[in-house]
Image (tube, rainbow, N blue to C red; front, side):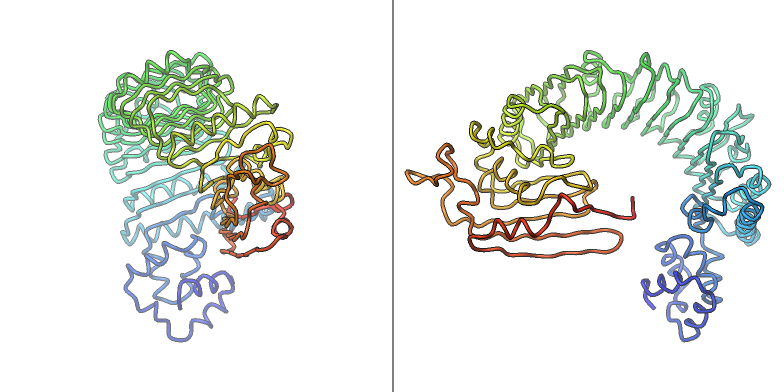
Length: 554
């Protein structure tokens, strides 16, 4: 029985069918227990739990399995929403589930089985029902020397964190969500290296008291944590990565930890929030999103990080001029800074540049990018806007080995016909055009899209279009032409005003490959069109105006 057969069998949900089907010789059951554990690690956790009914061998493998993820995914599958309606039947089902979790942990505790991972999720409005079980589950998990512990409560922070967690020598990774953290009497998390706090209500002093007891901490993440106002991180000699997100009360952030290599600051944050990162001399990765940073401050900060390799700036609407001077910077990303009017870059090592926003002024200096990702967009397009757009495309193609054109819904692909007659195509010598359309629904038929792309880059040999974000499907078109791109004394009638002929005048063959990759499986089709009616055949193939890309992963 292979893994796919095992999965289908477990999905039947009928224990009798499962037992009857496995009454024959089960070769997998003869495998060593560590290999059975490895197989279980690939299954969804609900199916991992079900394997206990397959045979005595599988039951034993389940009882010694060291990963117990009773997280939100588990509850969404076994505890239907209509059962969480506050009825007595729903409450009883919830008690049964938590009692099963408690017993599962108790058995492992009694048999002294070490846990690699234990995750516990408490559904919203059910804290009173689950409260008697939570402390017991944590006690047993800590008794199993759990290495990775996750405790998540849905809703506003009301549950005080059990202090027994803060004196564990075994926990290496700790995730807490939806909890209240009060001043601890003692913190001895001597093995902790990663701490993730989400929706945890804690003051500055409480957080600092917690971190003092974590001498080995390398990664600290704070998301949606109310109560933090004046946060100073100091004395954390091992701290390597820090991120803060949605700290709406934060007034000041100071990081005094010279070994930090990665900092991510994401809003919304108060307008007056100040940052001090000057001590992070070994910083390599820096990200600002939805923060109120100023032109001069950003320029000064960048100059203080001699090892900086990656910089991301997104949604920072107070910025008007970004001036980057760095000898070490390799990746620069600038997204949707609404007031931005110019970008100046002096970065000889810069390899990858990504930009999303309106057309602005770029001063790039002597730079050659290995790859550029570009999305130029505006709410009010005009002839002047398109002219500046085309100039920027031409400039970036001249300084980039690979350019990927991005679009939200294809809105910046179709160039108005009247503008085509007065504007030259911006990319006249590009063999391969690479594009990404990020929306799940595109507003244009494939004929219009191909026509738009091939006007931007006439006579490209290949055109690749990835659809969705992240991409789940793609179109690849390969073109063969029967005439030269540039005419000398013999120009087609429709192209008198253009130095390069319309692509459909010269097309001989087009090969279209469409692929789709999703949870439901993979799909691919291939078409070859020849002859005078290629245009009409292509138009009938795929109408992206009505096609939607769906995947249950989202």
